[in-house]
Length: 114
Length: 113
Image (cartoon, rainbow over all chains, first blue to last red):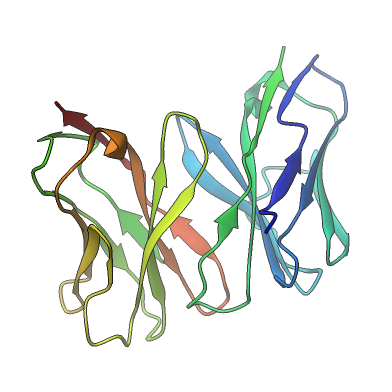
């Protein structure tokens, strides 16, 4: 079975450029999560969706960040304009809805903004 | 507010010995789930074990067991018979009824041969 798929795996971009990260959740999962991991702040939840609807985006750092889930099999996280402090590993995870279900993580996208 | 605390930034253990990684949590929700994830140096996040707040027995998965003490709000991970491949960062996490997963800061485990 295919796990959570993320693309690209690595992204290097210049400050001010738009960055789009993509995620395909595990088929049948109805919850999708975007996390950011940095040395300083650890793993932070940015936003999550249940049944394609954003439920909590309180972790999104600022207006430069936006996320969409147009259908059950695809989500994007966009940063516009990007800044060096956005450099991090961005993980997408999916699960069945509910507290008892584990989240399965994608391999992550390592973003470097110069 | 919900919170997960892992007080051990780094741990060492001798190969073949057991090790306990500490985790305490804080929540006012009666229903929640507790999870442990492993992150090796390659970076992926691997689910290890789950404990539900209403579960009466401690969860076990192979060499992993979760020492769940609800009154003390602790959910320590026990790894028995450590192997070199267990060297990694370990994260404790709590999921509430809304589905949010909150992570601790992680514990780096080094297994010595």
